[in-house]
Structures are given as structure tokens and as C-alpha cells.
Image (cartoon, rainbow, N blue to C red; front, side, top):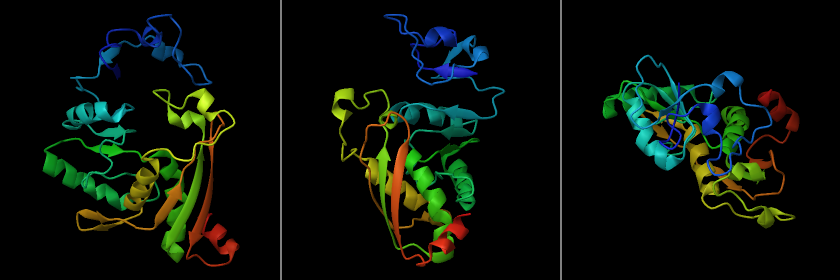
Length: 239
């Protein structure tokens, strides 16, 4: 089942991808969309009937997620890309291999909200890579401070509104409003420890995030304080 806002509901997916003004296809991935999906009828995301659906994946803006995801979680587990519920005390930001103990928050979430399902959002994409590399170092050596510079590609800014092309040409945009705080907060939550039915956040990340001109991809530089001097020991632990 595939669902979208009302403006696309009732259309075949292939037709919904077309700009209604000029007929251009709004698909920006390098690979073509899977052919069987193009013939799927798009359902209305608001009030969606989830009978027979075991799991919902959502990829919507945070404002829409605030409305739609609780509807779905009443009956069905929801895996979300939105930040709408990431900072709720009873919502875990799950990263495989990093914080499995946080799944215990799902029972609290269901109990306090009266849901049979739950909401489990993904972290910010930059935070995902950061916590995966920090976790083994934190467990083995401890981490006192992290200084990370993430050089964000243009594609990470999204298309609505995104970064205007002339603004980024031969340029580096030094600040992405709200992004530094978002990654620091999420990293602390993901790498925090369970304390009863709550998370006690880790409190070390400090970071900066300029936007740079590559269309796809990003680079990251990290300085981590309070690890052993031998780089080999760190590399062995990460492996």
C-alpha cells in the first residue's frame, strides 16, 4: 500500500509523480522507479485504513508526521524519517547495533498513549554515522568531548526549499539553522543509558555543520578527546 497527501490520492503512482502544470516527472534518483510501483493506486494518507498492514514506513515533513503518525500508531508500528517525535521522552531513536536497550521505551510509549503500535523514528542522517563510530569508543574508552565538522552536500538540504544553486556555487554556507543542535541532542539521546523507563543522555558532542557544494554525499572530520593515544587501538575497537 502506498499513501500520500490528498493532492495525490486516487492517482496511480506514476501519474502522481508528474507535475500537474507541465507534466514533468518529479523523480530525482539516479535509478528509475520500480515499474510495479508505478501502477499502484495512491491512497489518502489522512485516515488511512491499515487493516491487514503490519508495519508503516513514513517519509513526510514533521508537521504532517505530527498528525499522521499517531493515527497509524494506534494500531500499527510506525518507522519514521521525520523529527516530529524524536525528542519525546517515551520515543526511542533506534540505531541497530548501538542502542538495543532503548527498545524498552516502546512498552512505556504504548502504555502511556494507549496505542497497540508505536512510533520509532530514525535519527538525523549525520547523527546516524556519528553514533555508529562513537559507540565502540564510548564503551571501551569513554568519550569526554567530540568536535565534528560535517561537510553537508547540497542534496541534504532537500528540494523544498533547499539551498538555491547560486548561493552554494563556489561557496561554503557556514551554518544550517537548527541542525547542529539537532545532531547534538539526538547523539546524546541515542548514546545515553537507560535509567528505569527513561534515558539519561550522554552529554559530550560539540559540532559544526557547513553546507558545501557537492551535489551528493558528505565528508566528516572528528576530533575525539579521552581516547587512548594509539590509533591502532581505536581502529581495532571499531572493527
